[in-house]
Amino acid sequence: MVASAITFLSDPKVQSSSMSQRVSFLESKGLRPNEIDEAIRQANQSSAVGSSGYASYAAGPPAPYYGGAPYGAYPGAPQQQGRDWRDWFIMAVVSGTIGYGVISLAKKYLMPHLQPPNADVLEADLDSLTAKYDEVANQLQALDAQTLAVKQGLDEQKAEVEKSIKEVEDCVKSVRENEKRRDGELDRIKDDVEGIRKELSSLFEKSKQAQTNSLSELQSELKSLKSLLVSRGTVGGGSGAGVQPPPRPYGVGYGAGSYGSPTIGTPTGDVTPPHVPKPSIPAWQLAGAGSTTGAGAPQVESKKVEETAMADPAEEMSKGKGKDASE
Image (tube, rainbow, N blue to C red):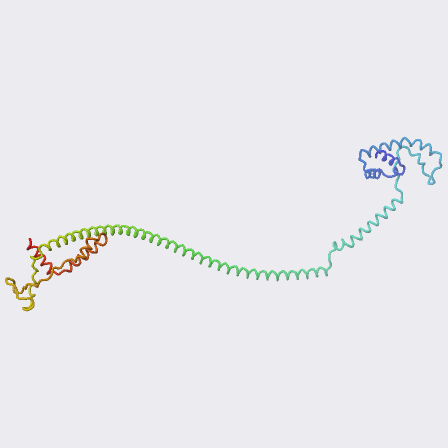
């Protein structure tokens, strides 16, 4: 790459161009800056070595037609040639064309924006702005009306919501009060039920004790009555003939032909009653009284007591007199 660059730089046609063009060309070929510097140095050395021989060789030919110095007369490295009038003319034409194009574009696209608008345009803009302002004002008024309506609706909804909240709070308060009252009533009922339960338990105990005592007393009384009846039946069987029936109450008499004449030694109004069989307990009741126990015994004994209580008072009196006589 460096040798190719040296050969390229040693070419007389290339030496007539500027250094920047040669460097840019070498860079486009991929050479690094140090390689470009080395190639330029070696190309300058080779051109300096061959310049003397070339000058002696070129001394013989005639001079160019434009009367300039021979090419070989320039010692050292080739220098850049100066610009002539053609270059300046081309540059002027190109610059003028570019300037004219720029000016035309500026007048066409830039100047209309930089120039101040005329009165008609200003009036049209003013009318359009006024129309837009009126439209915006109408929209703002409509928006204000809608906002006011929405605000009123929100106020009404707020009032309804506050009313509903108040009702809910009242309901909750009443429910809480009812719950408290119900809890109090439940506590009171619970206390009452507990007290009643305790009282019932005590009453049950007392009733049970009283029933037990009553049953024990009744059993003892029934036993005593049974023993009394048994003893009475035994005594009545042995001395039943000597027992006289009790006299009739005073003032109660019998007719002359009904039971016979009255006995001697008795009061005027007393008459000896006829022989009436002694009331006694039937055998089946005695057998039932002897065979029954537990719950049946009190029933039989109670029947005996009732029968005894329902006996005739006169009979009881006669029995008492008979017992006294036997004694």
